[in-house]
Image 1 (cartoon, rainbow, N blue to C red):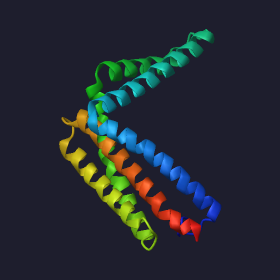
Image 2 (cartoon, rainbow, N blue to C red; image 1 turned 90 degrees about the horizontal axis):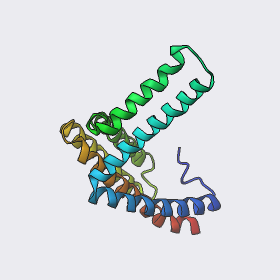
Image 3 (cartoon, one colour; image 1 turned 90 degrees about the vertical axis):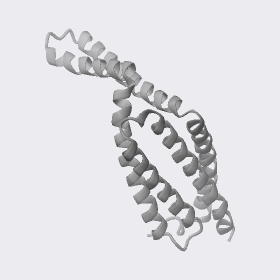
Image 4 (cartoon, rainbow, N blue to C red; image 1 turned 45 degrees about the vertical axis):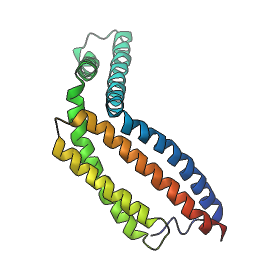
Amino acid sequence: MKPILNSSADNLQGLIKNARSTGIIMLIIGLVGILLPNLISLTLNAFIGIIFLFSALVLAYVAWQSKSQSLSMWFKPFVLFALALLVLFHPAVLLSVLGLLLAIYFLLAGFAGITLAFEIKPANGWLFILLNGLLSFVFGAIVLFSWPFGSSWIIGLLIGFSFFFDGLTLIMISRQAEPVSTQ
């Protein structure tokens, strides 16, 4: 199965354009993550906490509007509110869990990238996909071996590196696909 190689010229041009612009954005976010890893980690933590808080408030409003006397209607908003407070005021808890999840993600992304590279091996850009997969796998091992104490800064740093290399890979694929699309 080689969907990239079997695309029409119009689809390939769209892929090249989208890959380049997405790659540039991911490259910039990656640089921010590399230079300010704790900022990326705490931003992610705050984002998740705010989502929990917003969900708790919406569900509490629905329970209040229904004028329900049932405690079961208030249970989920209460739990989400408690989780939001925990996440927002004790970021180490969430960052430790995220550290473990991130290790799993990077290991799986690395495996997927390596597998994809060998599946499309004769195509231009397969080497960049292989390098990206190998780096993701190495990042997963680093996170796993530094968990839980290094979770805070390493999450931001590795997200930065991953976004940087994903962006670089997309840019390189778009550059190498240009000669193929003109044929």
